[in-house]
Length: 168
View 1 (tube, rainbow, N blue to C red):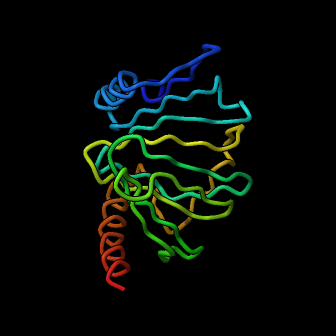
View 2: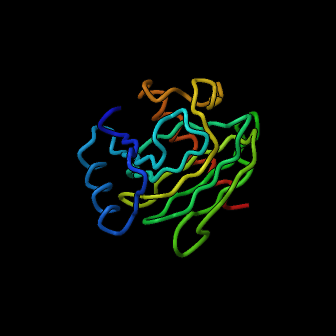
């Protein structure tokens, strides 16, 4: 995980296209294909601002937050955003990209998931901290990332549910 997350320690940090390219390269070098630049100094900070790079095929387990809202703004690439009912049924689907929605914000207690649509997607996330083990609530209907076989089965079923939802 250390090679996938960097916490800024400077009093001033500036992000430009060069930094975004470096983040994408670091994601390519990581085993998971992910990289996260945290603008805050630590998980205990009260405000969390992060540039996140994810790769196509990456599984981000659906989660919700009981005490904080969350917003994402697209920087590069595209991703599908899914919002779920408590039982795992799809409530809403939309694309986050420069051609579609650029930003979204969800309230507390909403299961959500992002699926990268491009080779790499870069987005900016903002939410309140501090981050603790109880910050993210994961549903029983979505497998843990380590269970590769169940993740593959879940994603295959989810693809069909997405297709059916979009045909409505």
